Length: 454
Image (cartoon, rainbow, N blue to C red; front, side, top):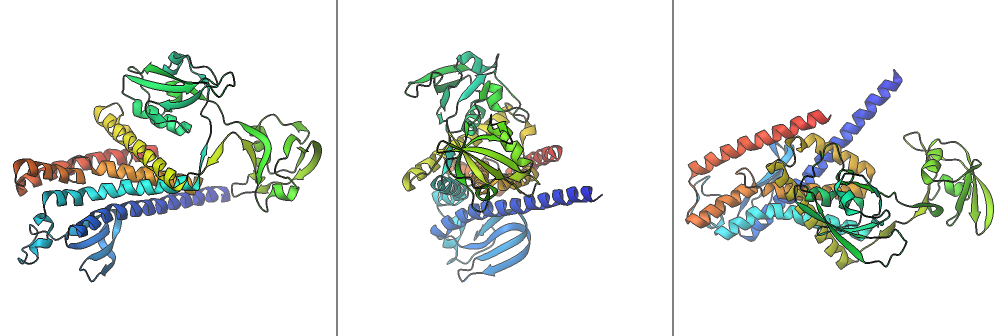
């Protein structure tokens, strides 16, 4: 009974943690998005009546001397900036110059576009922080290819290192996954690689074109990497201590940086996976290590973590490196990553509309909440990647030309620029109704998919 109660409370805590992270994520993204509208509106000398984070009943409000009321509302699933508008109420002549609808067409367009643009700026800043902190990079090598797949037509030798897919530079297998998903639905894809099978790292890059006209896979079930036919080569891990955590079991055992593990519990070291699994058993281990050419026996008593698994507290040596970018190079890399992710998002949206990707892949708030909790549990950097991705997604989706979104408002302004006058209120209301129905259908499908994934 206690075991079931423990599992129940653990799941409840995970759920609450995911919900909290979801609310924090949405609040950050909405605040940044609405601040974009607010900031450009103020630059254009438009009076902002209300800046609201969330919808519904007010939880907290403060009115500034400028006359703008800042509101925190009960439902944190959006927000809005309400600007002075002569169409909403009759204004005195001296106030009309501060009304949104009285501003020039380009000013109104800038105010509307500023919201999504702010989300892209946030993504650049997040990626910039990540690259300044440092990212793990390692050779992306192919162990083998799966027969009867697009990769099999490459005749790519084992141990080859992937460098580029179409115009996407490859630094990790995640880049490979993104590039292949982006290519889904195209007729061809270019694969650039270096043949490292003979150990010569100075070989030239080889570019091959692969026909993927008939290539398709279920994103929900399959990985783009394996569906394409690549079997990734595992990261090379060597039993040489590269770092020891302070006050860890490894430090207490007397392990030192540079020690090479020869055996453990009288078993010769063969691979890192078996060694790590033995540590997880949280049992006392007798290690034999090579230190400067001498064999030394040490006793390691792993500490037990929250999951009941043993932890040694040291890092092995591998062929990965932590690369920290300079201030300017980090910004360039952040821009490159933002553009790449934006292209992926736009491409995925196109694939969804054209039927290449089924509607079952739409995700709603429940999936986003679960993803927020999972990425945060992996660490601060994975959560930052997630936040940047969602920010870009929000920016792209808001530019979709539906009347309820910023893209729809920009479309109205385009019609106004072509016609010379704004669409009638009746026409706009008709479009709003159509847009509202479409959004409700999309949200309904996304929520239904969320429930099926539970």
